[in-house]
Amino acid sequence: MIARPALAPPARAPIVGQPAPVKAPLSPGEGPKVGNYQLAGRIRSSPQSMVFLAHRVSEFGIARPVVLKIAPRNSANYERTRERLVDEYRAMAMLDHPNSTAVVEAPDIEIGFYVALEYVDGPDTRRMLDKLAKAKRQVPIEIAVNIVVELLRSSTRTPRAIATISRSASCTAT
Image (cartoon, rainbow, N blue to C red; front, top):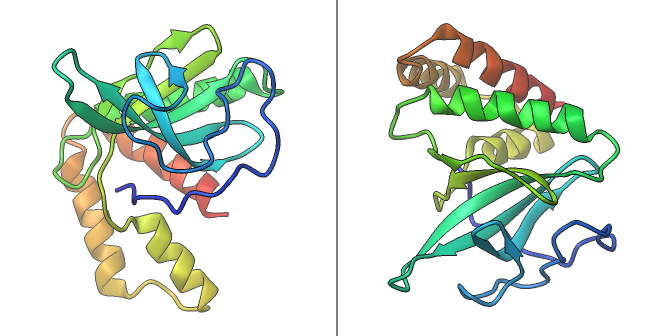
């Protein structure tokens, strides 16, 4: 699950062709647009991709929060990052579980490629693992087994989804 971020100004200026930086949480309709979404705040960024909290406002004025993972076309490793996001999108599309976030869409646009994910407010596994690592503690076996069991339950269509998620998890865990 993806937790509500503590937003801070970006550490570096945007590269031309990237979404404008978002310095504080914004209300739906206030931020810069990417595709059909208005950015509300930056969650994190790396040299390859950026992650934003965003809103898609319907014609009836209903704002639906999402998380956008964006691979800017002008980044140095665009093709590799795009491929990684496409793999992640395919794996997540195969999962069907209440504890998995759903993929809303994954289009190519002028500035690059993005994956829009359902936004779920609350703590996430990554944050728990980061806190345990900082405290130099291991994940209790009961929690580790529960995570694996729930991941296996969520993969109703193919084992390839687990392999892709496992590869992504091992890349982000280091």
